[in-house]
Length: 112
Length: 117
Image 1 (cartoon, helix red, strand yellow):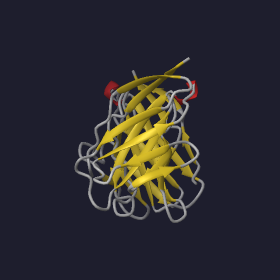
Image 2: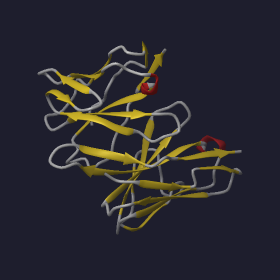
Image 3: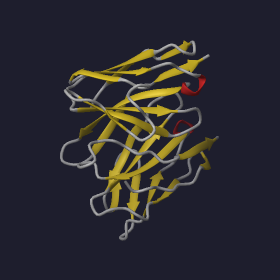
């Protein structure tokens, strides 16, 4: 399972766009990139998943360059409620049996 | 999607005792996963619980310390045995579900916050 590296913490203000970049130099051909969000005293929650190029849903966008060695989670117009820890995970969801290997995560603090 | 219920939500236990954490899923799943999250840390996978076979433990975790049961496709238990203060953590149960033709998504319970005194 590919190891990931992301910033330990980030600060932002309400209404700004936040981009969190994750490095995964050893990503394998069958690996997907998945981001989870975790609020205090809760389990992680799925945000978005992608394989290449760009994926967008109602919550976020995920940008993946052609070499797939990194990815960027983009949160548009954050609010105070987006304060959480964001985890980038890389793996083959179809062949690793569903188990997840979490990195350290990025603690995002959104200020008024 | 999957809804996961964990019990208890929190407990304070004496060292040397054991605590069994229950995890109930609202749908049948082949594999259930148990994670530990130590204070201020990320999640670490303890083991994978397969119905009908013994659990598969990750490096650093052993069955004697964390026995797991998986009696059916919707339920699992994790026991933290002979507890010490170092076992104080949040323990989370998880399942994975394929969403249509695309995302494979993990769902987590709310966790069990264990404090060992």
